Amino acid sequence: MIQVCAFIGLPESIIAAACSRSGRRVLHVDSRSYYGGNWASFSFSGLLSWLKEHQENSDIENDSPVWQDQILENEEAIALSRKDKTIQHVEVFCYASQDLHEDVEEAGALQKNHALVTSANSTEAADSSFLPMEDESLSTMNCEMLTEQTPSSDPENALEVNGAEVTGEKENHCDDKTCVPSTSAKDVSENVPIAEDTTEQPKKNRITYSQIIKEGRRFNIDLVSKLLYSRGLLIDLLIKSNVSRYAEFKNITRILAFREGRVEQVPCSRADVFNSKQLTMVEKRMLMKFLTFCMEYEKYPDEYKGYEDITFYEYLKTQKLTPNLQYIVLHSIAMTSETASSTIDGLKATRNFLHCLGRYGNTPFLFPLYGQGELPQCFCRMCAVFGGIYCLRHSVQCLVVDKESRKCKAIIDQFGQRIISEHFLVEDSYFSENMCSRVQYRQISRAVLITDRSVLKTDSDQQISILTVPAEEPGMFAVRVIELCSSTMTCMKGTYLVHLTCTSSKTAREDLEPVVQKLFIPYTEMEIENEQVEKPRILWALYFNMRDSSDISRSCYKDLPSNVYVCSGPDCGLGNDNAVKQMLCTIYPNILMDSSIVLIPKTLMAHSFRSPTL
Image 1 (cartoon, rainbow, N blue to C red):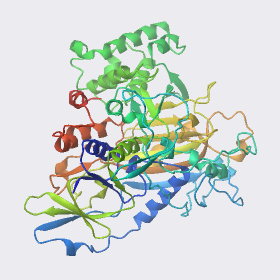
Image 2: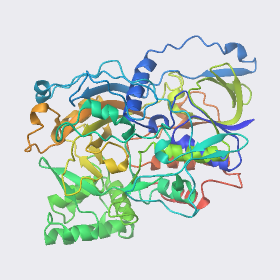
Image 3: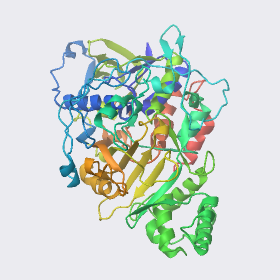
Image 4: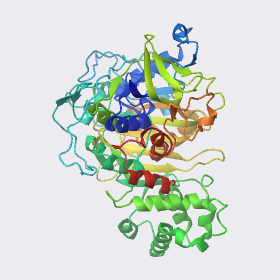
């Protein structure tokens, strides 16, 4: 009998790995064709296929259940939704010049792919008019085989943080339950080698849509944009569970600020502060004194007593800080806004930022090579190594609940097969509207841009940057911008992948387009030879809204069985700690605390309960 049945997201993958390693029988089942759910990463063609699947999914009708005949008298069924309503308001725009007459094929692809995208010509792009994408998109990405990377020889090895490309030899790992072909991390989603492109670009600085299609496998585009705090819960979990051997990471090289229409770099470490030419000597002493206080603010309660009920922004005004320093601390260190955080929350965020400095570099953040989608796949690899079974493109029709005990005893799949299990981990998106009728969801506004240069040019073109753009109007939210270079293995050479994220107040395009227009311009043929253009040019853009199902109480779901655990999707926060805390504090104790072999050390469990602010 299966002991844990899970769907595939980051929290579910972590729990599945823990259960599998502790000797439990784990079945990971998902109606999608890829790993990670809304935590996934896609190649460019894979992303277009995902967009097509989303459009087709919106047209699905919930047919009359054919599984009703299998429900016994002492049982009842909880029907699961076939529609994924977590993604809304999808808009795609292409500005790169297109050679539609060319027979373009993605390098290394298994089959020929076609895409028809409406482009913005030079006149229209100059007027900042965005043109929608046609309904046609690439064929569905085939991502079925789970792969495992060769383990590190040192079991105590910490995270690998470097700028080199990940390589590795393939091997097979087989046991009596599953056979898993092993590859490097970048081959997980599509197990095909990348063909090197030896052709020269037709013109300097000219990147066509055909080139993006051909080099599509060099893109790894995240649905959710996050970074890892170097001393956060997820980093500790990766190291102590030895899952870190399946991935490599890079430092975020710089933190930027947007002031008075200009992008500038913010000093982070002590050395950066004293070497900065943006700050006067007096400001440097002021900043270091305030940051020293923030590191141990709990020892000096008199310094903030009486200010607990005001915002952190108002509190900074009471300190001996210049407006320039207030801006840096608020938006680039605490990474909050004028109205979003209280004084205590702002001090905690500042302390967390400073606490993470210096562990792996001059900034507190790490980014996994090949994208955030590698993280759930790392835990899936460990689960498979210890016998976990994976079934993609395998939909579940309903949960079967025993009327007397009010516990879920089985699921019924698309073939009418009953699968019995002790525990069930279900992503929020699988529940029907009736079951979630009391749930109040928030939304996340997301944009993904492919650009031709960095928002702040320096001597090096391999910079990984994070930038917070403050809200200009009341009721709006600050926008987080993460810019990735080609050395992160998320985009082709000569381009940058830019992620924009904020809490939704309107549609994603309405929320994020004003920031896009401040930082970028549309790509036009007329400006190709113009070396005076300072802003990066947009080659391709995607906007969409994603559901934020974090921090929702179990009581909000109608008639939820006690052995069914709801795993939330991504939240709007910068790190992954919210998902890890949900797993550590809510799900993990109920399933595995009686196990003698565990994936998560008890020291980390205690740390998660002691430090809810991280």
